[in-house]
Image 1 (cartoon, helix red, strand yellow):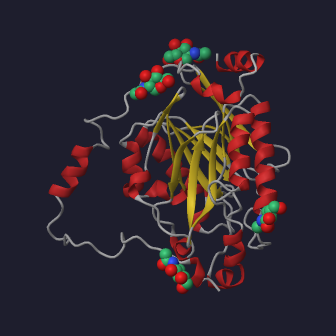
Image 2 (spheres, rainbow, N blue to C red):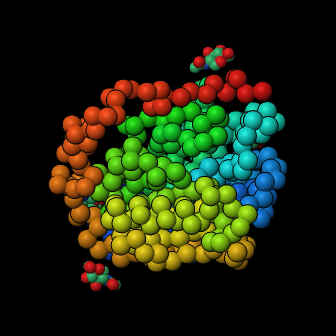
Length: 343
Ligand SMILES: *[C@@H]1O[C@H](CO)[C@@H](O)[C@H](O)[C@H]1NC(C)=O
Ligand SMILES: *[C@@H]1O[C@H](CO)[C@@H](O)[C@H](O)[C@H]1NC(C)=O
Ligand SMILES: *[C@@H]1O[C@H](CO)[C@@H](O)[C@H](O)[C@H]1NC(C)=O
Ligand SMILES: *[C@@H]1O[C@H](CO)[C@@H](O)[C@H](O)[C@H]1NC(C)=O
């Protein structure tokens, strides 16, 4: 339907922009392409601690190639891993900050800059939804950003990781609570979270309360199961378990994009498809997953009687255990890392 409409508009010479006025007819299927290939300059193997710097220009061009490939493969949605633009720095400790943080900031995207526009226009050119994971520079800070761009090039979601995990919190600044937005599309309601946001109720709860049909879960990279060199926090065992639990808890198809492993979980939490890190990215840069979305777009956008609902939140607040002081600690204070302080 959308495709034929676009064709007739093009024939009448009215340009792609008008595709935005396409009728909002619910679609009956969605093919998603989950990127598992690495960005430019990314050292292999998956658990390599070698860091070669990042190159946002080369990575953006590579990203556009994958957006094009996804479209050619028949996908209507392509999702990238966390911080794929310009690349997740494995081993981002104090020594890394000293040597590399400034170069990383220079290679972060500013919304509206040339690389951002290339990616946004690629969504339009290849008529595909694009879910991005990127390091975003805003004034004196960088954020761990996610965006969902629709096939007309319109930005549907733009958010920053609420609270970067562990050492990430010394580099990227905190996002805000109000950016947890699930959006309605012709395929159903779509939401985004990244990495360890999938563990924390302050991040899962507001999204799950908005009743997603399709959840996009980006992690930076995932080694294979039983990989002895993997640290616990980066292991497939722990992170794929989080994705599976998220799927059950939200009732949403959960689509996982990471460098190495890509996977999809059904609303019952079972894995329906995956490609492990041991399969070379060159032979399979994308995992393609097709979903029957019949009826998704008529699903309610919340459930007042749900496990994740306002009343549950109130119940937690009102019935808070007396032995735990009702004190606002420092943890939820918004952390701001001024990039000028990086060496
Ligand atoms: C969501 O979008 C679909 C397709 O555009 C539409 O049919 C449906 O009514 C919308 N649902 C809500 C809750 O807005
Ligand atoms: C990206 O390319 C532009 C245009 O050639 C250039 O001005 C810019 O310095 C490059 N960015 C980086 C981080 O190398
Ligand atoms: C898609 O799901 C709908 C509703 O559950 C079902 O009626 C239909 O047969 C399914 N289509 C395919 C191709 O499986
Ligand atoms: C960041 O640090 C620079 C240099 O010290 C300072 O000029 C700037 O005001 C700071 N920005 C913010 C938002 O605090």
